[in-house]
Amino acid sequence: MEITSEIKKTREIIKQAKAAGKTIGLVPTMGALHEGHLSLIRICRQKCDFVIVSIFVNPTQFGPAEDLAKYPRPFEWDCRLCRDNGVDLVFAPAAEEMYPQKQIIWVDVETLGDHLCGASRPGHFRGVCTVVAKLFNIITPDIACFGQKDAQQLAIIRQMVRGLNMNLEICPCPTVREPDGLALSSRNQYLDSQQRQQALCLLQALRRAGEMVAAGQSDTQAIIAAMKEIIERQPQTRIDYISIVDNDLLQPISRLDRPALIALAVYLGPTRLIDNIIVDPANKSL
Ligand code: AMP
Image 1 (spheres, rainbow, N blue to C red):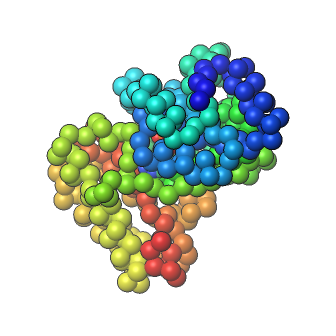
Image 2 (cartoon, helix red, strand yellow):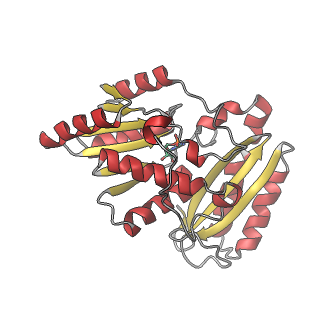
């Protein structure tokens, strides 16, 4: 496995892999890798000949009051996990390599970017799209894998690829969870033991929503109210949002008459966690 931090060297390695007829797969990450990331790597491995993991804690997607400085960066450990999971190249640039000058060109997101996570994180998806577009231009992958755990990010990246005619396939990957159901996240390590226990209410609320849909409830406000009640029973929680939206343009829906995304973000103390499920009133919960 090779490790690069320079764009030029990375392009040379990829050029060679392409010349040897290999298909290129990319798994973009911010490091602090866990089983969720590893599942993306394994899916990418199955689909592509040459697997690249990018590790970059992208400053432009963090707000001024967010956890950029304290975001975990266990680089050696991440490289070991990549090596053990058959990655061919880790691309881990410094911020100066990705942003050598003040960024004046941005990929901006209309409609999908200003609610759900976008409401409490203004500019977040502009930062995400801009860095992902840069990674796509540097690596020119055939396939890029993204987790359903970040459902809004996945929907926006799909729209970006379609809207800007980018020549690659986006591969959505299922959410990996702890045995008790908590979605794996690099931010889970910020939780103390009480918060960790209380964090289970995210999935409990989503499961309740799934049951209500399966029982024929189509009033999204009633579903949201039931979810809210489950979460507010836990003293350390603060709800950022609970939304039921269509899974394409992420617009809120009042009656569940088609497949929908039920997404939520909840603070446990200072730590903000997200989770979601897709429901289909015709097929019960997916
Ligand atoms: P991050 O390092 O948090 O930016 O995540 C990198 C990629 O891993 C994104 O596509 C995430 O959606 C994905 N990911 C993060 N957590 C999980 C999880 N628990 N299950 C599946 N994919 C995940």
